[in-house]
Length: 96
Image (cartoon, helix red, strand yellow):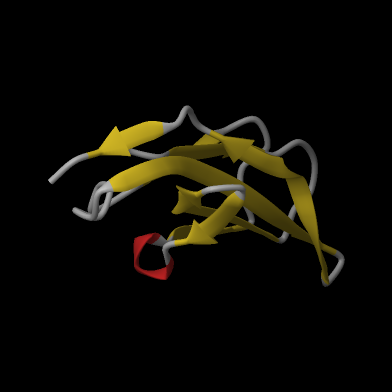
């Protein structure tokens, strides 16, 4: 299972950050797997250009059900805000 996050900026942006990671589904609770976090930071991104961050290590080899998550933040005029809602991938079952 891989996770991919992309962003395309419109207008003047000082900095864009994309984070991707896995969460393990444990009943009704989702637990973020800290070791799976990957980040890409782009300073002064070109408007209209697509930037991508891809998972590096795949799903941890721990049996369970996982979902990939992507989230992004933009910095404009020195203020950072969450740019979009988390994107959730399909559930994937891992057996080791």
